[in-house]
Image (cartoon, rainbow, N blue to C red; front, side, top):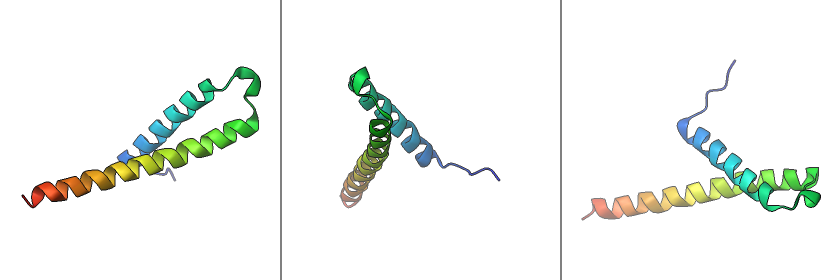
Length: 69
């Protein structure tokens, strides 16, 4: 059975992947290890989720504020 990915999940995966690549490219080649790759992978996923969630919270709060006017 194929797992369906929501639009938001797809966006999160894409952004996390792009963030991972940006962070990975910033590390000098001689310091790129499996451990650093795993750490960057985990960090990029957690950071992406955090940023998107905070954005959505603030966006929704602003929308609610405008709705009341």
